[in-house]
Image 1 (cartoon, helix red, strand yellow):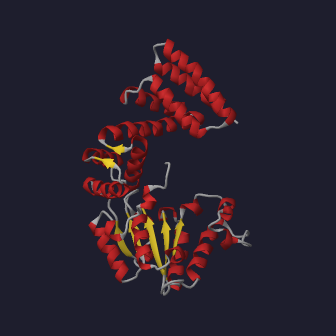
Image 2: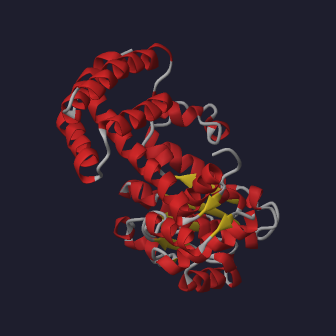
Image 3: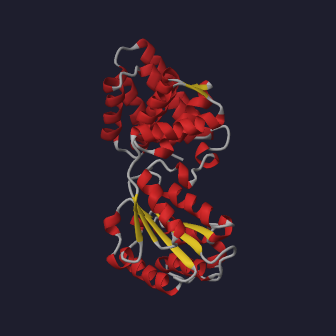
Length: 336
């Protein structure tokens, strides 16, 4: 992306949230502050809804709205957590804490300070499906201790992973995936604000491509607009078809690097047979992806190998054979 992401510059206000039931529940939480349990599929707009609420109720959301991504703790090492600038000040002098206590400590410290601009602050625990039960029990105690000045929001894709004592302390906000029509309306609001030339078919195509994922829809529209200067069906088809192929190509390269050649060849077959790409088109996509994955000598080796395979593709007749040879040779060329 050349400029700021549209997901940030056009972050929705409460009235802009596409699902009516979500707007109603968030409005209720605005009028009567309470702990929230926000759940729904990936990309449905859970985090956006919470941010919209925080921006509305907190005079200085930069001070009184705290986002903690649970995956930043449970999916990372102690060293990575301690060196993260968001947590460094909390964990200074706490190097002896076991990893399981780090998020509990950061949470307690965040909940304990006095709100800056109002009567309460909001703490969002995002991707809460990563929370182990022992941490959930600790969270329950923190919620009980700091309930007077802290609103807790638990957001997750898997509501069944949350223990009953926490659920009972939260007002549920189910967030379903937006319908196709709701996604089109979101895109129309943004592209009109951006002044981008578009037509109905173009927005329909982007919404269908995103398949209920708001973030994917908005970023896909931005990608198309930046690449083609407009959002029409033809423009979106050209740009997003290439993006989708590049995602599959990257998955294929990762599988080859890790020695999973059956997986890599399976993806290759899908691209050649099911999607109908030629060997030359796939090699072009491979080099596009390689430039974002490799640098220096690794990239030079990949280009050299690609040059040899490209010659075979021109001279030969079996694209699958030559590209399979490329995938089998890739680990040796990318090994540090």
